[in-house]
Length: 356
Image 1 (cartoon, rainbow, N blue to C red):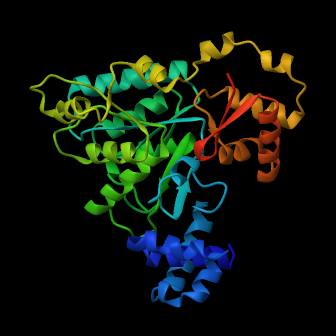
Image 2 (cartoon, rainbow, N blue to C red):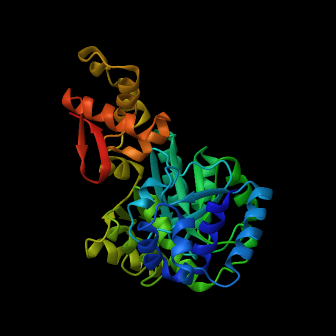
Image 3 (tube, rainbow, N blue to C red):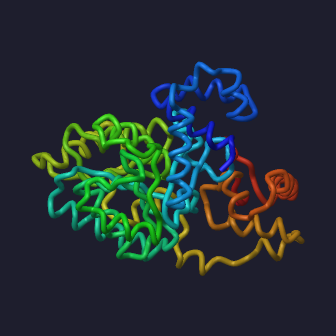
């Protein structure tokens, strides 16, 4: 790791509660090292020493780093104004899969809620095998979602409220270890960070911002799941909630979300798939390749078109760069050429899709 990474870790560690102010400073400089040199007041006492120890831990445990200015940063999360500047990941983790759903809920769910969650994930896996499930490894719905994803062959990403030097709660350690094989753990917190109450609230913005949609399975009238749902709505994500009887305490939060149009009512996996306009494995197999017959495309253009055809809602240009492993300028140029040929269409926010 070079000096730039040392400064990235040091400056973000010392300004964890002032990330918006720090972002403004970083945006004025090409590198973090340059920013640190011009703004020594942003570097806390002992930050460099801490960063060096953190880099040693990162090298020893093969931790992946995601800086908000780099192409490997989660592109969905990058659209959120309060996204973490630096993330630490471990495992066989893909932070930019084609489809991603966050599942949250109460820590004390009913048997109905747990059974529904298991069946929901199983049904999603049958139709969308490349889906990634995101949650927080907490008791209740979180752990059911992670276990169900692994049992169904889906990738799952854990978003903890602490660093990668521990697992909380410890009783879920085996699930976390399994997730490293097909998915992984992603956090904004450095080593030594305890799972404090306010960290759970802060990590909810990652759970909300990482996904295309957030599903609230069960929630009381107040709780972290509702915070996640409101954050997701602020990020312009689709929010879904499982309804329950008016007298069910664990469904009060979901019912309120639905009643006030803060979430769409969901009863099964098909509801989510239809609302998101996602192509299922069956539907994709039935589609013809008319675009290939209608246009004489270059290999790079065909590669882009093939990726865009897999997503009706569109794909961000950063994701296309990651998927194709082509240079950003080349992807941008080829997309413009495809748009001139009336093959693809640009959308707000750097999104692209195949033209109907």
